Length: 306
Image (cartoon, rainbow, N blue to C red; front, side, top):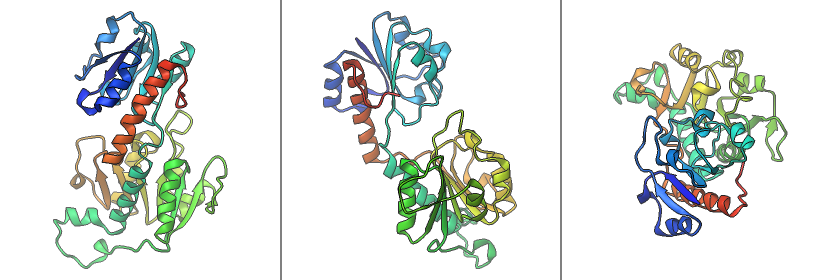
């Protein structure tokens, strides 16, 4: 069995490399190739791929997968799995695994940080070059007693909700099924018409994309939307949110996936590089889980198979 690792060798501990070597021949592909001409394309041996999304520009489609001979498994270095053609893999008995829950605390803490930044008008401070202005534009708000609304309440969403609750906020949520907690389940319309801070917290797939419609966004008035779980442009009308922020109707925080900076956006818009998951503890959990998934796939039993 060959194990192709699409990542830098130095990122793994010696123990993790030994664990991989115990079940196969390990080949590290450290350089990103825009044309995807990786060595495994010309290898007819049985193989498992350990893939980081940046090596594929977040897209492994049927066309690429169909050119890989004797592919037995793909271990994703992400919780999300919408960037690989899962249907093709299932049809061809290719085991796909993901890395759930490794960044739950990291992402939840980052979401609360972005919420605080909006509440305290931190984007406006940056754009005003930290000049002191006691006016309506710079008037901030307290979060205690405010309502946090969640669209989806999975592992990360519930972690953020617990943190908000601990800060003295009220919590409401919409989810396809009711959760066993003390929070109130409501309809989407109530989230967008009444919550002070709104958190999309659902996994992106074909069914949930555009779950947040323009009509829902247009219900918002002097409310904040904080998105760290998914790419904003994939799950709702990002441009509409920016327009409403420009008009001063909403506040908006998101992780950017382009070359724009915070000063390029008008209104109380908090822009962050995609660092929500990036903590020492989170990365350690990720690497351990990624290696374990690959080893368990080869051994024939992985609990994180999709």
